[in-house]
Length: 193
Image (tube, rainbow, N blue to C red; front, side):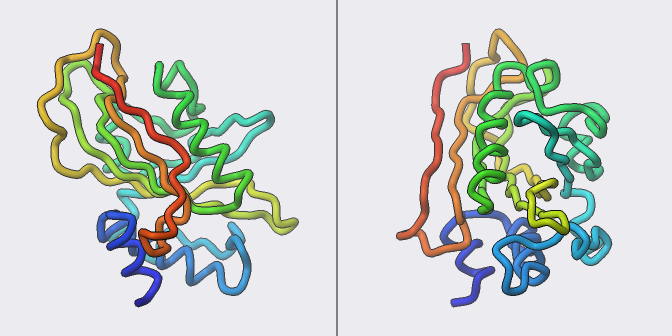
């Protein structure tokens, strides 16, 4: 079984994210992490609207360098140039930062899946995002390539008191491996307030 089918079947990720992962694997070559210099955002034009790029900053901060059209549309605003923090993501920021820190420290890809609501005028949506580390010429993780897709709408959940809100979020390290070797690095599940 090839890497893409492991990722797609075992991780349950969408076809678009599996293609992004396959591209990451290709540019990785024999290294544990591909170089940022090898990443060409135009190599897969069909994926461009689903892709975002994060820059690692000092002390576990992450700045969104760029975000594709579908990512921006789902967010309801332009998020490029913003930091992943409570100002942007409210109470769910700590969970997102946990996943990003794991990617940087472990140098491993992570699949994040869950149910989220980001705007008061919106509804609960299922999402999947893959986080793929990229290194500079010294081998340090300086950027994270992300892919985002929405999946079927989550089961009807009550409107939360605070938006953005998260009803469920699962984080799986090395989602491209067979399901029997998945490493679950986090799970949160709670009713919306």
